[in-house]
Length: 371
Image 1 (cartoon, rainbow, N blue to C red):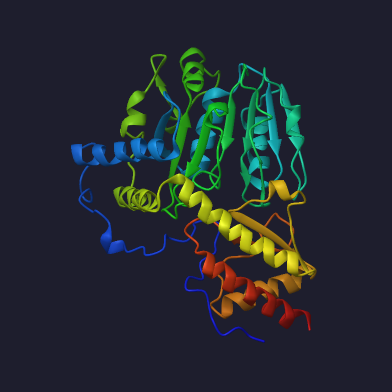
Image 2: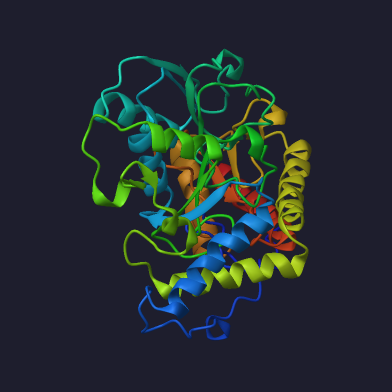
C-alpha cells in the first residue's frame, strides 16, 4: 500500500547535499557581509574555518588546513599540478571522479611513469599494489559508485612518496587515518551540507616539504600557487585566501561546524551517517529485488549509498521520477556515468527517520513500476 507518512526532508542529493537539521539562514552570523575578506573581521572568520576544521577532525600536529578556490575539484587539481612529477605515480580509480584525476595526470600533466589501477563500478582495485616509493592518488569514497576504502592498512607508514586523497564525500563521515594521508581535499557542499565553490586543502608536513623542495616544470595558474620564493605561502592556511571567497558561504560553513560541536564532534556525525547506512542495509537484506552496487560489504559507502534494482534502466528512471513527483525524494538517480540505479545520500545532515520512511516509498514505487 502507498505509505501515508513522508520524509520531513526530501533532499537526498549527493551534492550539494541537504542542509543540517534545524538550519535557519537568518541565524547565521552575517557580520562579515559587505566587508573585505582581507579586513580583520574577514581574516578572523576564515582563520576560524581552518583552525576549527583541524580541531574537529583531530588532525596531527603540523598538518595545515586552507580554503582554496573551485570546490573539491580545485583543491585536487591544485595538489596534482603542484606536487606530482618527481616520483612515479600510482592512481587508483573505481568511479567517475577517480577516472577524471587519472585523465588529468595523463593528458594534461602528461606524466609518463604512471600506474593505472582501476576497477569497474561496484568494485575496489587491489590497493596492495601501491608502491611505497611512489606517489599515490585515490578517492577515499567513490561518490558515484558507493564504494569506499575500508581502511588505510595498505598505505605504508614508512612511504617515500606522497598520498593524495580526494575525500570530499568522506571527511566528517568516515574515520580517516590522517598520519597516512599527506594531502586531503574536500568541499563544504558535501557531508556538512555547506555551500559550493570553496575547497578545503589539508597538507601534511611531508607535503609541505615537497612543495618547498620541488618546482614543477609546467606553468602554474595563480590560483594553484602554494609557494613563493620556494617557501609555502603560510597565509593561505591562516585565512588569507588566494582569491576572494564568499563570506556568506564562510558564515554558512562556520554554522555547520558549530552544529558538529553541538552533537559532540566528528565521531557523532560519523555515527549519524553510519546509522543511515544501517537502515538501508536492513532493507536490502529483507528484499530480494534491491542490492548494493558495492560488491564487498566492507566497502559499502555510508554517504553515497548506491543501489541496484532488478528493473531495466527506463523503469529505474520511472521510480526516480515517481518519488520526485510525490515529493518523497529529490535527486536520487544514479550518477550519469554509473549503472542505472538509486543514489541516496546518507551523510549526517540526513536524519535516520527520513531514511526509514524513504525506503518504504522506494518499495511502493518499485511495485508501481514493476506491475
